[in-house]
Length: 421
Image (cartoon, rainbow, N blue to C red; front, side, top):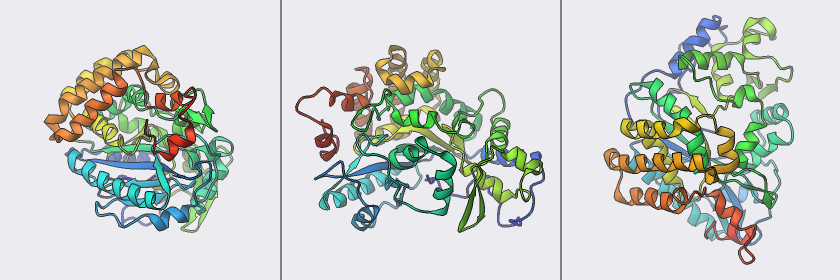
């Protein structure tokens, strides 16, 4: 999972530091965490879109990653194309003002869709593979160690069968405020964009089955960061108390750590050698809380969306975090559902409390979009999504659930048609 914001990764060791120098104890970890929250005036947004790829003629067939790589063209919008371990394709668009960032990434998504379509392939914007078993295609030392650490069955599912929309937002002049908004809005936005209710061709019991997968992974690296008190101090504690997943020996060798030790243990002398600043920066990339600070905010709790609908997800999330008036209205609506993260993933907007909160949040976002310079077309897409799903108390996952009772429209045909109703 790669960032779509420009500039150096926050908290990195820096060119002037010797890579092998031992860390100077907990205070240096705390300083690392503070750099991750350094004010950065601006309202840029970046998005990273993951999609599953299906063979139109046989959606149950695994698509070789090489076939996808050969079909993808050069992209004029500047997006980077990478691949997840199961062959999921990821497009990371350049960060910029909302309208510009969405426009450039949308052009690249359209180019990829067209190119894959000519080769009989389709992009599926869904958070969990609804049909195929997890099967790893990408072999890299980092992923080998990660697979060993995470174990079965949820490690392979997360690595090979999930897809998300990640929204990256500047911290602005008041990082703590944006951090708080991103955290507190998680249940509402998770429910509104829940889009992964099926696995192996049948309901999995969650409207966001992708979130269910994350719920079953190591909680020291996937649970939310504590929201009480200073964000930088909370992030420092999270970094210290998360279990070590792997140690990078060099660019080609990664060693899985399976003894349950934490970064704090390593700092206290438990390892074969003391950790360095580079080790700390790398450890941070193996932690996956729902919101992760990196000198910007990574919002990581959103399921992948249909190739036509992801701009709505990016626009709404950005508006509710960066626009003060929209944020105040959305947070007031979200307060009664602040503790319903699991309910949001299980039930989506079928829960009336979350449906009410989401309707208020979308209304606030729609009102904010003109203030953010969003063109009428994108604003209309947001309003249309709200009418189609939010006002009706439906998450996008409901479209997939409908297939379970539709005698005509079945899952393979839905996938072959790019999820068109």
